[in-house]
Length: 160
Image (tube, rainbow, N blue to C red):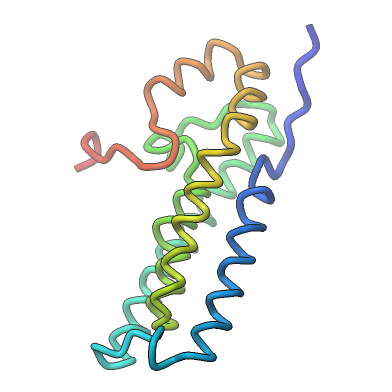
């Protein structure tokens, strides 16, 4: 039986297109009605620094995970080490846990926190497609990995 071809982008575009549309929409709403939708309970500098830290962590996580994934895809192997040892989808986790919240905090637009929720919902909706391909491609090895490593929210008990 021939193995299915692995797509380099997975289901990412299906997840991020609606998330981007939501983000642009609420950003426009926030710009039109800043008195309602901007977080102003702390000085702007606090929001900017905190948001910048979250964004920096997210970008580092994306970079490390992206390099590892690209190498594994090029070599035709299942990546299970590094960030992939704590969560099966570290790139999606980085966006949902760091990049989108960091953007919301840095811009002070509380509606932007919804981007994480939209992305998480779309992730749950579309990830079975990606996992079916991985199961066909890697077989038992992926099924064992899937059983022991969470999909999107890392299990940090083994690390902490």
